[in-house]
Length: 255
Image (cartoon, rainbow, N blue to C red):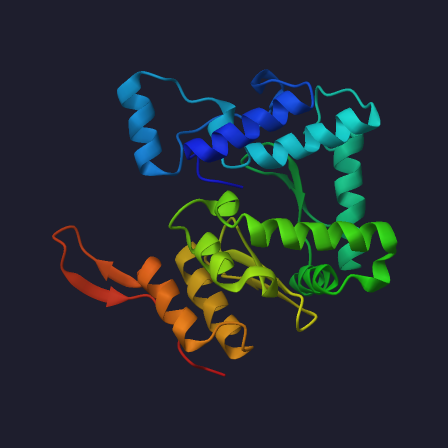
């Protein structure tokens, strides 16, 4: 996931080239970069948006990589019955120990099949990502590679200035943090062997950020100095259109 900055677009473009694919193989659709300055620069230059600017283009490049590696046809890789999506479902089931066959299904904004999963199951999956020794050698090694890659490249997850990336830059391999749609946040905490999953009922992303920050502070993953830097980079202030400070986004210490 990314926000459409040039570095992200270049990364996905090179990735596609490395696996013998092009932007035409991406089935995620396109939207303006979420990074406002990048969107404005493209508009000013008269350059049309492409699937490379989709915030999920990296994930889709991953699907294409699996298909290429296994010799599976590329077209339709976003369909529920495609072998790649079947493997995704199997991996989520294995990690979460949640039976997904009878769970509600839907289609994500980027076109892939999604399924309702118990919040407890997703937290459990993140805990296994954090402490993967019992998963078998191959999957455990993959989990460790994922954690290390995210720690070493925090800006590739959500882009510069984004809460997700700012926290990752502060915590390194002690916390793999990943935001999702509709007020969803997950975290894997390798040093503690814990997993976190948060869902805000009304889908407010800014509430999810405040909530997950409070949880990470409570668990001792983020100290006071880090909290100050995170809040300085991702201001919790709320200002109206006249620039007047009218409030703050923060959690209530209920536990």
